[in-house]
Image (tube, rainbow, N blue to C red; front, side, top):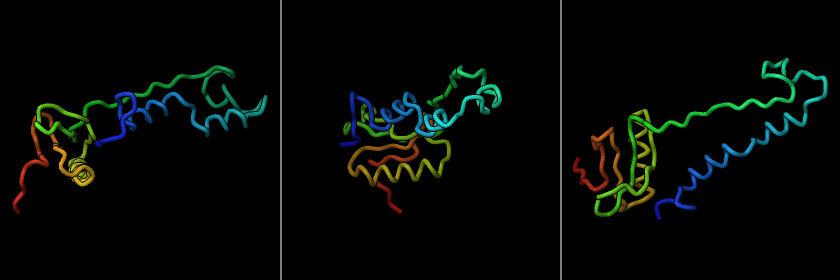
Length: 124
């Protein structure tokens, strides 16, 4: 089993989506601790008292390096494991994935260029 999947999505994706929907406990605690007439709302520069402010979040989808697991025949990607900007972090992620899922075809790519492939025999 490559990853725990729920509803066709990985557990990490579900966790990220869940975190976006739920207010964090610290935010709930802050809202409860505010006193009427205290330094809230306008005083902190967050708008008028009682108004909620929606913050936009951006999820990155394009990275310099990517680690993917493949079908045994190598025809298609089973799961995108990681997207990373730093080469050394990407290489460490690739090796960790190879240890985690031995025998699974895994690649480290930079665009279309395959840097590492778990199916290649390395002789040093």
